[in-house]
Amino acid sequence: MKLEERESKDVVYYLYNSDNDFSFPFITVKYFLKIKNDNIGNKFVLRGKNWESPTSSIIDIKSGNPIKNFSSGGVWTCIDVSIDERDSNISLVLENTSKEQILLEVNTARNNDFVFNYEQAELYKKKFGSEKWAKIVDGKVSIGMTKEMCEVSWGKPQYINKTITANKSSEQWVYSDNYLYFDKGILTAMQ
Image (tube, rainbow, N blue to C red; front, top):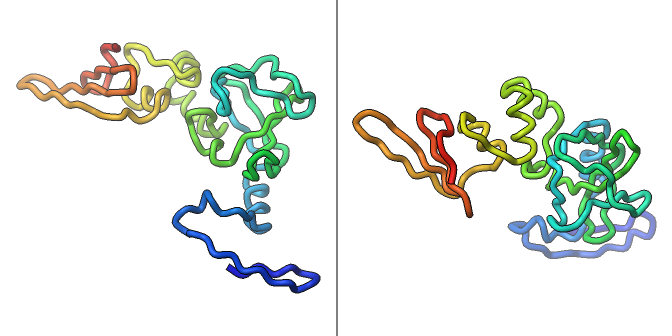
C-alpha cells in the first residue's frame, strides 16, 4: 500500500496481510466518515453486560465514574464517533437520557451479545411480546419460548442434537454449560 502525505508529498509504503484486516494499523478518512454517517443518531438497546470486563463497571467517559444504572434494556443514542486511544479502534460514543456517555466499538455494536439496534429490538419486542422480550434482552430463557427467542437471547448453540422417533422429533441445544430441549420448536426443558 502506498501512503502519501498531502502537503509534503512524502511517500511511505506499507505491506500488510489483507487476510487479517483486524491487524491493519490505519483508519482511512473515508471509512471513518462512513461509520460516522451511518451511526450518528442511531439508537441502541444495551443488554446490561459489560463487553470489556464482566466483573467491572462500565465507566462514563465524561466523568470517569461508573454508570449508575447500566441495566438491560437501556436505550442509548450514538452522538459521535471516536478513535479509541487505547487500541485505535473506531468506537461509537453513546449517550443515555442521564447524559452519561460510553464508548462502544463498532464491531461490538454489530454483536447481539451486548447490544441491539433499536429498530431491531422494537421488532423483536413486538414479535415476542414485552414480557418475553424483557427476559431475552436480559439474556434469559424460559420454558415455552421458541427456538428463535432462545437463539436471540443466548446466541447460536455450539451443537444441536436431533432425536427422531416414530411419533415426534426433538432437539437438544448444547451451550458451554447449559442444555436446552425443544419439542416442536418450543423450549420444554433446560439443564
